[in-house]
Image (cartoon, rainbow, N blue to C red):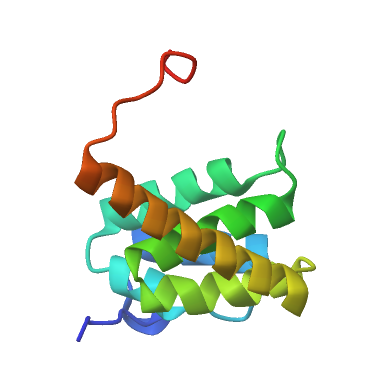
Length: 129
């Protein structure tokens, strides 16, 4: 089980990141993922800065980004990330129907990916860069 660093016991550099997370997300406390990363302050800061940048408004809307994050989390089997990003996607508008379709796409892609790899299917010229 990961060691979780509470705000009260955190060094100043961790508290600074925790404060930014709380302010950015409008939450009273950071979740366990961030508390676990706090055992190594440079990683905590790097991951938070990267997440803020990647998930910021851009060419993809916030829901699409959450759906992609959720799909990757499912594909990698990360229970924590699945729970966290399912909640976040729902907060950004994911419906039950959208979730069902997402699961169907993830499951189908996983199967066809494994089949293509197992059969060592060569890439068609029109798909190759």
